[in-house]
Length: 419
Image (cartoon, rainbow, N blue to C red; front, side):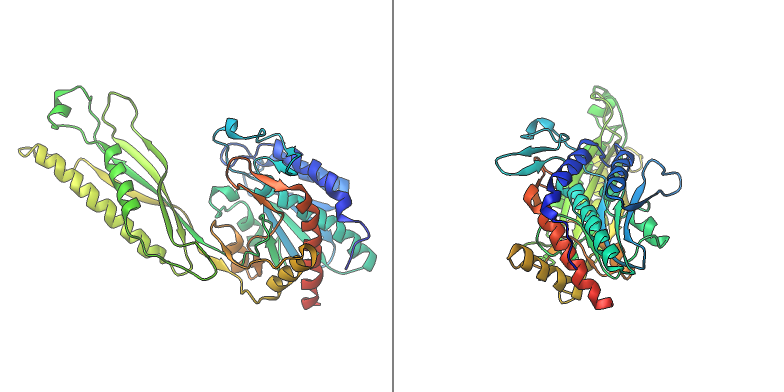
């Protein structure tokens, strides 16, 4: 299948559309995705593509957008998310992060969400536009879908985005691509385990005799700090996998830390997040048990310290800790020899004249939901970009039209396997 419309002639429209999406702040946990969904709807109207806004109950301000080319059974699915991460310090960026501006020297469009994940959505949407022309011209009884989903950045296990659409059978396909950036054909992603460690202590005035003699008070913040250092220093198993070069099990304690309430009060509350990236062979149960043991040992040590400071006291333990699982999702994979993977590899060779790598990726994503639902999925492939979640996140403008050509080639060749 080939389109009479050249993808390169659409670059200007794609850049304008992407710039608009970047200007709409859709930071997960701060903004809703409603205005992004509205702007995608406007583009669908312009391109005469069918679309539907679908929200989970009581989440009307966070709609998913399902775009469809064709009218028959769904043969293929593109997925991208409309939310982004935050920007910590806008002054570090060479161009404003929410302006959608182009660096003329590098031909890079700079902006938060440019490659994660709004740029991929733009490429997939324009792929559907060209596919619609082909489907109409050849009178094909198929349809191709693009799901623009919400809330991925909350931990890739949201119940209101991909999960909601899958459970209601609103999206489907014989194959799928999550439209993340880069020419690596991502056949796997690592799993994820995120924990909150909450320590309770005993507050008391820092200038009091009771604290000076340790008759009262227990510092929750310093106890938690000891736990985080112990987690960082622990010799974790070097879990590896040949599909993940240079990646292993990773435990990162204290990605978010909160403690105390006032400068002159011994803190009675402290909490921290621990981010853990799981390899396919990693046992999440074993990791959790190790962390529980470390936490218990340090809390016991600190309580023993306070008891020794007040040997004649009958006070019970002053410190306690709880561990709460905030996010958990498994690693996921598609066989490197699957027809979808081969179609993607061949398309890259044809369009870019390079042989792409076929490896797993370090970050987790919602590919596992699609694979578990019986949809073979490439967990990441899309336009060239970089600095995901970082300063000066970017997407290559020339790669956008190339990506459309590659997506067209993949769908054309892969769908032939299913008649």
